[in-house]
Amino acid sequence: MPFPEGHVRVRAHAPGRVNLIGDHTDYTGGLVLPIAIDRGTTVLLERIGNRVVLESADEEEPAVVDLGVSDPTGVTPPWARFVAGVVQEVRPSEGGVGRVRTDLPIGAGLASSAALEVALALALGFEDSALELALACQRAEQAASGVPCGVMDQLASAAGVAGCALLIDCSTLMVTPVPLPEDLDVVVVHSGRQRSLSGSAYAERKEQCEAAAAIIGPLREAELDDVATIDDPVLRRRARHVVSENARVTAFASALAGDDLAAAGALMVESHLSLRDDFEVSTTALDDLVDHLLRKPGVHGARLTGAGFGGCVVALAGAGALSEGWVVKAVRGASVEVI
Ligand code: GLA
Image (cartoon, rainbow, N blue to C red; front, side, top):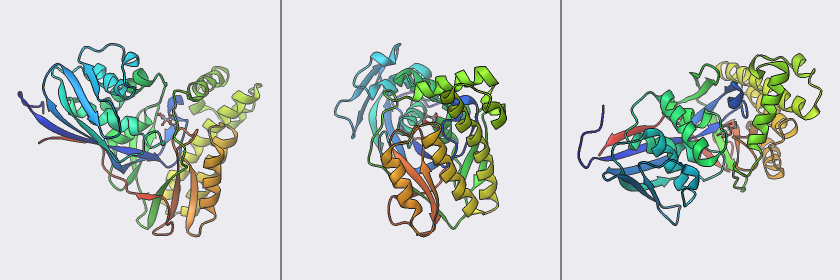
């Protein structure tokens, strides 16, 4: 339904996400298994004028973006680039004045920027499917940050299903809900280090995956035997992570479905080691936190979540077993209402 004309006020909410397994696979057409979480970003907007003016409790300066914006990277303050990226994608006929509130830690690997993009796109009147919403917001993120990110964060935020993890095939963009066992806590623990992907080696990792694919073909279809034929040791390690991680996502989804939490936890630990040793995106703080959590009774598995280089760890634990971090619930995807 299109918004009615006039000074309509809307409230849009988009969840953050935590990825249970399958990192640095989405931009190679691989498999991921995130959940949309019960922390997220809300945009309250009155539709008026020919620019978007947003204040945020977490930012000193407001974002002021003309509807005709054409270069998000040149916009200041930096957070306004994400607003500009979304405006450029949605091209609303009317601007708005409003505010942003979030209970997601910024730059912690929980998709805070995706939640802002998805909530704002809905507040500005985006009307297509959850998949199109995610793709538009992925383009907005890339234009705003210059980081060639995949679609996982935006798609998890847009297409979340309550009580379920989302098995996403990033080749076909098919989303299959995988119910989470009831007696299980998904716990997020912050390593204390904020990270910025623009300054990180994310783009370099993507290029290395492309270089490996140029040798052995699409990594999604490759086997470990193919990977072993890559001469360059760095490219071989990067490809080994992606190929083995895709297999772990499939095995993890089966383990969850079969309530085999020991197997699921072991796959998370393997995933962390692969991200640490083959993909080299972990940090000492993340490694120490994973080790610390794995020593706690009732913890099935733990790993870094998201891009790495800092940010959060996700653990699977028996209900109530962990007293640190936050237990997150799997929630439905983003929504908007006229208020
Ligand atoms: C970031 C990106 C995602 C994905 C993860 C790593 O969150 O935005 O597309 O690549 O890193 O899995």
